[in-house]
Length: 124
Image (cartoon, rainbow, N blue to C red):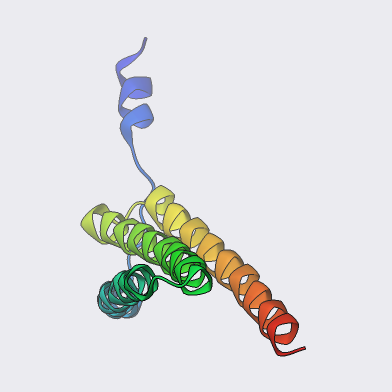
């Protein structure tokens, strides 16, 4: 293999913009804060459901813990993707962070839809 080809193979396309970096830094900070809050909600729902002893409350507590757990994991993954991008500013890491952002919003919308349907079923 030619030396120039080997050097070209190791080049990583980069994207850097101070406003983008600052916005992503702020988003990552908010995601970490929200993931702590959702983890707290997860723990509270689970403990409350288990301590109540009523089967409906236990089921609701487990369901709430599952929902908050999904949201917490997705927020943590999204924040980790942003951290990876901010570390080396590669285009691949930025794309990975945006994929994680898209997955976060898709799952959040799906869970919101389940919540709305569950609300109307419960109220009926």
